[in-house]
Length: 382
Image (cartoon, rainbow, N blue to C red):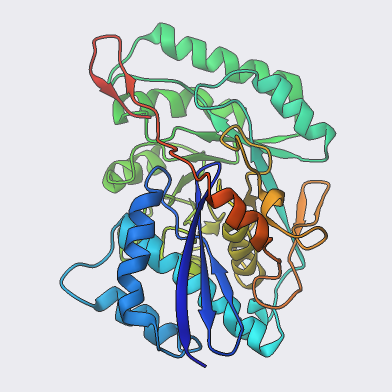
């Protein structure tokens, strides 16, 4: 079997899909996207095609190592997101060629379903109570949301009081019926993170994500020692080497690597198993499309320390397209009472609606992250 073509499709709302074709008529799908940089990733896939066309797609690990180690430059969001999409597509091909789900090639499943959560509130949090109760009515018992808008490196206690009041009102509204995950989104600097974590402890969040930006692992380690709240990091880390310091410094109790950014199914599973040795929980990041979510579910199937799965069905980013728009009817995802069933079909276990993908790619998208500024005019973290 030989790889014959790599085809990319930029589709709404902000995704990039990859189809890898072979000379035996078996194809696989990946999602090599980096939010806001879809055109860049499409170009990177074109560059990688020079190396992989003509290779045996079943040599997944060899191809991964070749793409990672080729040339002087390793890691980073662009290269690793491109490798992620290709790695996922190769696993999809191998599973389809053998007629089994990917997890069967990785030791078999340790679970049949995984708890999931949805986003509420948007970029600047609003309508949290309405969003949480609506999801609860659909059977979910966990949600995640941004806790704040822009915050200066040292901001006012009036701003802090507003954040705390909003979150206490949410907790009062849902009681113990829902678990809450707080996302600081890297927009909270260390001085304010210390203040907020202390104030938020009574709310008992299941984790706080990106309490400081991911580059500040040492600072996150200090925060982890000063709070009882589990801290989470990972969506902006791009290989196992980025996670090394996280584990060594005990900087987080939960990691959320993204299989679409960290090196695909192969690297996510390596990181997930490694985390288990430190008693660190795994919660794969996935505010993306159906192929990315399907790859996460294959990871959840084989990593014992996986406990919850982010998914983007209906979130605020999904304008002009949603996950099930790009899968064939009856071959998408089964979501029951807030739990996702691990797909049992061959490869990724889902069937992409290629006709819809091709049609949507004729329109494409130009999604970009918003530019925020503080009151003084300086750039704010989004």
